[in-house]
Amino acid sequence: MPGYPRRSLLAALALSAGLATLPVAAHADDYPNHPITLVLPFAAGGGGDVLGRMLAEYFGKQLGQPLIVENRPGAGGVIGTQYVARAKPDGYTITIGGMTTHLLAPITNPSVQYNPLKDFVPIGGIGNSPIVMLAANDFPANNIRELKALEAKRKQPLQYGSWGPASTGNFCGEILALKSGLRMEHVPYRGTTEVVTGVIGGQIPVGFVDMATAVPQVQGGKLKALALCTKPSPSLPKVGGYVDQGIDFDRPLTWVMYGPAGLPAPVLKKLSDTLAGALKEPSIQQRLLSLGIEPGFVPSAQQHEILVRDYASWKQIADEAHIQMQ
Image (cartoon, rainbow, N blue to C red; front, top):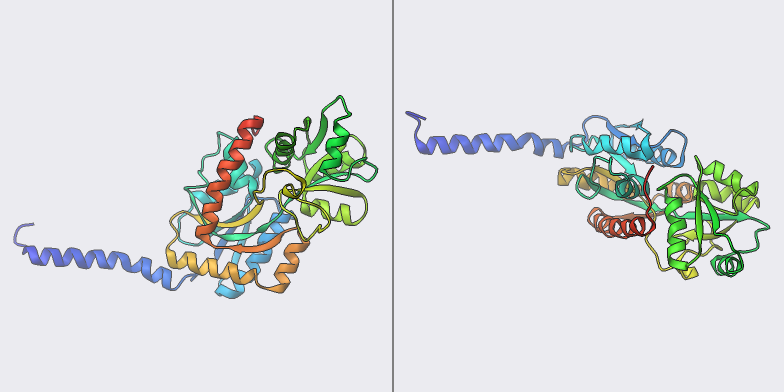
């Protein structure tokens, strides 16, 4: 640059670089200064939707800005999750994900266009929500041990229902088959309500459904629970988890709050601290338990390590059982 002293040029560049960082720092310091969008990749009215709206209400009160809930269902949660993966990492677009969105769909569906390990940062773990193995009350087995004894006398594989190929219920059935030696045959349904109807009507002997669907059926005496995949739950305290019943697979089925990768550290901390505070509230804890979710905050870095570990574990199950999303 002719006529521009080198020292002055360097000073100008340094000043320019410093000014360029000011908006980011200011943004982090006054975050949030306008509403946050909480994208829920599920249909309105389901358990994930209820969870999201409950946390949105708490976050809005604590942060001084509303969390606007935006339902973007479709493709097993992939559509809404992919939207957040591509969002600007400024803390104004976040989401809640479960097993399907951040583990099972990316593992079993080659068309998924996001990497759950690279395109997201966990804001924090919310809690564990196992899958329930249900049977009719007159089914001649009450647990996995009795089920194995029963199946040893049968010539045909045990049919089990889930809410579709590559669903968490499908995985839970295949884990049981792989780890116990039971011969099992998957019968896919369109939803958990249809699975319950199939079990009650005798079309299938057992079915796997989520806690929100199962607990009223069990507590109401309409069906019985044989096992929980994979961890025990205070919502069904008398029912053993997989490990309790001799199945060597103990990965939790968790709900997690996520943001796009690259969230500024102060923004991530504010969101994470707010989530931790929410999960300490007795009213929220009780509401979560009513949804079949055992609350338990997991910090961001630890939750990422869990996700990396669990991705490998569930991928191994998918490969061994040849599970693919159809």
